[in-house]
Length: 156
Length: 156
DNA sequence: GCAATCAGGACTAAATTGGTCCTGTATTCG
DNA sequence: CGAATACAGGACCAATTTAGTCCTGATTGC
Image 1 (cartoon, each protein chain N blue to C red):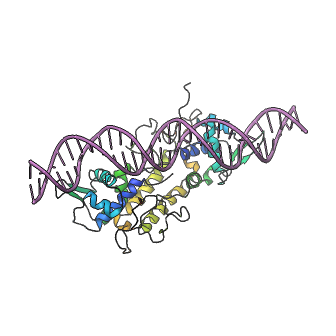
Image 2: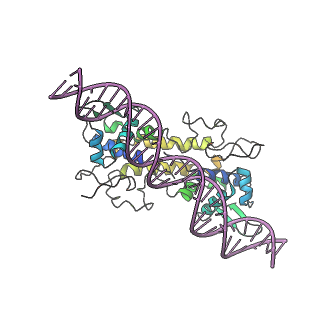
């Protein structure tokens, strides 16, 4: 199935939340509360996104995470790559997986290469800003990419 | 992770094998032998692809499966749709999944729509013929999209 | 020095996918 | 007409992957 992993989906939700308040340091607990994503999961996401350059971190009592760039300067492709690795439909991709010993000879390579490039191109054109809510709703936003990704929140 | 399922990968391999001999009826056992994909798995794939119009079937002693169209008239998008459902990175897609009750209001919808359209477009432009081996090798072809998809064959 | 928060990594539960098996139905051939 | 062949449908389980959690260590600010 061609699907984003739930974690990647969560990451976009979390980053969108961070983008609402640029220049602010957000703690894991705060982001978890605002997005409904479990705190250990948010922590896991931030540990992956920070080394990838999407966010910056500050340890210590006043610590937390901040976006490293404005939302319109962060592409969805970067987010997906940070969490899922190189964007491709198959394992055959430059530098992504050298398991396939015959990749240079693989007859299907040409077709997949075209597909992978198009998918990467599309994802690079969409930024985090494009994914953010243009419609104002009372926080926390209920809407997300999919109900499957939206963790159950306690009823109010 | 953005990956084709192994079953979809197998399907492309099996269809490519069928495309080498157009106008011929192939049995599940034959296709399994030629591709190295286990027979029950090939059967499962054919049960999904036949209703989708990719192949036709004939029961009975002289039965089997045949491609319903030439390889260059079958897009990868159709194959993926037949096995994995509508092509989209998220569950929010027209008619694909009505679990999300707020999909009409989902603020991220616009961005994903663009991405999903681009991915579908790219996959529709690549046909089964593009994926077939242009390089002649002794059958059965060793090359496939990924070593992960290639089931282990008994050593010769 | 302590509390707060990130960093790293290991581990387990849950979910999904891969793969198999069984019975039923249709078709062909002897 | 019956047996053999092969597809059709669906249920089920094993294997794999992903989601989610937990623990310890390091850093920072008050």
